[in-house]
Image (cartoon, rainbow, N blue to C red; front, side):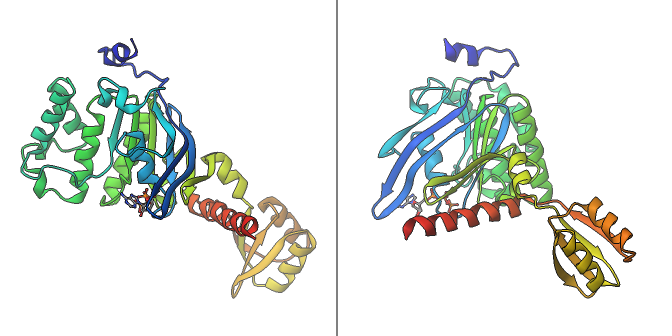
Length: 320
Ligand SMILES: Nc1ncnc2c1ncn2[C@@H]1O[C@H](COP(=O)(O)OP(=O)(O)OP(=O)(O)O)[C@@H](O)[C@H]1O
């Protein structure tokens, strides 16, 4: 019955299909690639899957797709193992290795072949080619495509079955700045339609302005699983920079008011622990001249550094 619901021709995306990974363990020889990996990708938001090279992101995705068998644990799509789904592309669209293409096939034929194998109508092929901006290159051989075009073709394949869940491994790779903006907009709109979207990256900065939630991994396990807004709020220490010709006097006033002050240039100070309004009020009261007061908004990258720093300390703590 659930397959029938997905296969229906209504444009409505079903919004109850997530991806659930629980207690995955996987060893390759001496390498413990997954060491208790557990998280859930919920519908209606973009979940970033972030961690350094070798952290276990691709292996997790391969396990979700049934390409690698875990030693322990399980992975479910819409409550079922991917391999048990009748038309898997209608459930979960994925981009794993954009290079894995038959080079002599045209982009259109590649997608037609996929559509046919999944019982999808050929009309979907032209729709997705249009959607990813490859309509003009549809009849060119994929072997001659740039990496960016291959990424787009891989994303077209992922979108073919209008799946309620999507899983993309490093989709920003090889894309130019316009391509990166394009994919951010696409991912945001897919999540806004109610789809569950998992996107991996080894660079937190790539997920800025697109991820609603992040699962940070290291050494085969989850280090943090948190909303982006909560994460930024947690690391937002309220850093303010200002210029003043009387840096020494300003530093004294602000330190007395409870701020942590450090010199950030010949006539520049950086203050943490005091809101901008309090800095203005204290310096004005004390008649200390200042200019160019700037409140610093933390980036996702800084948040990531803070989390991974904590996890390094945590590991150091438990290993002793
Ligand atoms: N087929 C395999 N045989 C042996 N080791 C493997 C295999 N697949 C993965 N590994 C190892 O498992 C660990 C996790 O790799 P994985 O590719 O999942 O990490 P990742 O987070 O996706 O990193 P990357 O961004 O480099 O792809 C690495 O140490 C990797 O070398």
